[in-house]
Image (tube, rainbow, N blue to C red; front, side, top):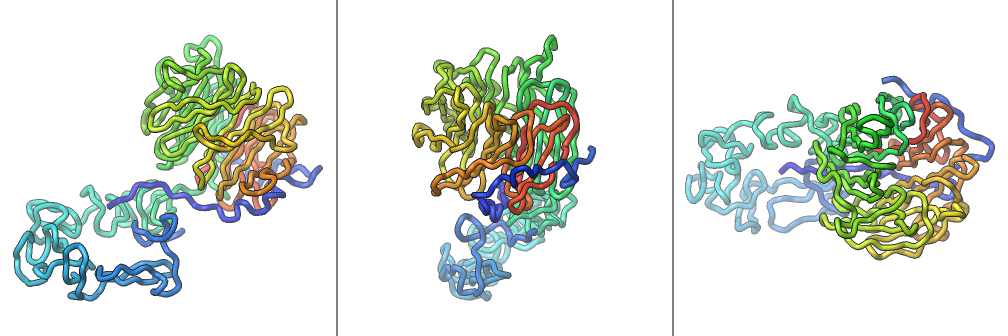
Length: 540
């Protein structure tokens, strides 16, 4: 049976050098250069099934390292360091699924399935029906399950083709793989890189090549960028001005989704909430999320499945929720908190995804910081974390944990404060020592339950700090990246050997740098122009 799920690669060593992250020596800024400079526009699996902790294949050195199920017609086998199995010899006694003898294909079947007669519920001699092994091509059948290749036409089992609607033959998923004209898409099954349209098989699932996506904009246009390290950036420009930031995410299917607020006084679409999709390394033209769907500030976007979830501040000062499952948005304007108790505020909200559920953070009209869960399609009561907040918060889902992490700025002092939790259970808010800013911050989750925060200091320098759960203090001392920015930076988990990806606005350009081997790479210009906002996201 075909498996549809997203595979991600664990970034080894992502938490190495945490205390030193994410700064370089004072007085030594990284220059703009060619390290990933802009340009104009493997592993083989062993099938879908796996065993062992965390859903991955069990590792081994000897056959005896692999789990064995007694009398099931399959013998454990260590194959290239991964546990697999081989079929027991034909006729071996067995005792599973009501059978007594092992068939050639490793099924435990009744003795009547090996007596040389067409009897019982068999559709051909010793094959087919609910108890015997499936029949070979050309033998009689009643339904697809009677056949080895799962296709029964005209009461005869058919040879596999790449257009029969089932996974069979040498296909790695339904009608796709190296043997077919169509290669398998992201999240479809694979056995080797050649099975995948992306030429990347991770475990047994086709995955994107390591990808960094970026959106940046300002008063005249919006730029969309794509990077597959170590290749150079490619970018495209849309004649869409904005006065606000962006939302950006990559779905488990490998499709990218971006959100923006179109701003052009006098234009009929002024303040329209617009979106783009990214597939096959191309950003589609932006389109309206829905009729009369408008916003007055930055939208927020997150995903953990094939469903993107968004929040935005309506022009009426109330928070709304929208969701995208390709190819459409539904809902487009669900009141956060419900119609009767809709949440409101003066600044935009932030959203993080947990499966198809979500947690939303926002500064209320009373300037308290609130979090609110969207679970099973229903809004839960909001929960106050206190504080005096006049800037948008940031929230992320921590990896390997049920908890979220929210960061916000105390009004007046500029102190960055954080809390972890979910629903109505949150730790007391605490400051990140030494982190001061007058702008919204950017957060990204890292492997092992860690996180990284990036912000623009009061001196316009970019700073980062690493969150390390279980350590005291949990946040590293904020370190200067060695670059200044005219707008808040954006941060994401690193891909292709990097720990962190960072985008920021430089002088008449938007720039990107990577934290690799405890040092920042030379900044690469993604696009030239006048920008006021930037965001970034990744697929590992």
